[in-house]
Amino acid sequence: MLLTTHSPEHVQRRHQISNFTVLGIDPGNTTGWGLVEVPHTVLFAGQINSRQALVDLINRYLPTTVVIEAFRLYPWKAQAQSFSSMIPAELIGVAKATCDALNISLIEQPASARNIITKRVLVATGGWKVTTNLPHARDAVRHALYYCRKVYPEAFLELLA
Image 1 (cartoon, one colour):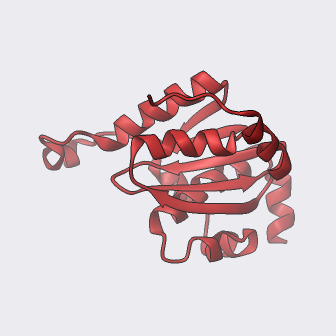
Image 2 (cartoon, one colour):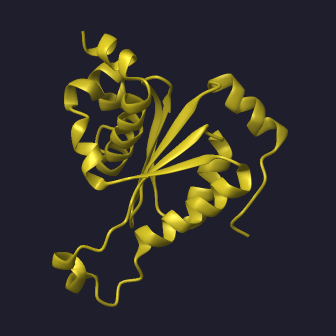
């Protein structure tokens, strides 16, 4: 069963981490993820490769918000996707269903959002170190930090000052 409820231990773990966390997800055959404590501290990151692992991840951390890279089938890439099972789209659906069941906000962002968060920002937030040799996790952290930058712009100005 893909949808699971969270146990009291998970709720306690979430409150030990932070009251406000953002889970960034870069969906794909290898799905990157990164957990950011608001406004900009990268706590954990990693890569997974199954729908159930995504459900388990959301249940484990119970973030305040999940930010996921949106899937768009661009005309110039459509032929390459012929006969594809569209794994990113499947994972977005799994994330939406899981977040709905847990009453967690889910935000989709365009792929271009990750390009706004530079190496300098990743280093300053701890994201560079925790995503070493994990390119999909790095993209997921960039998505989470981009969302935090939009919601807490003053904190990012202080970070980069």
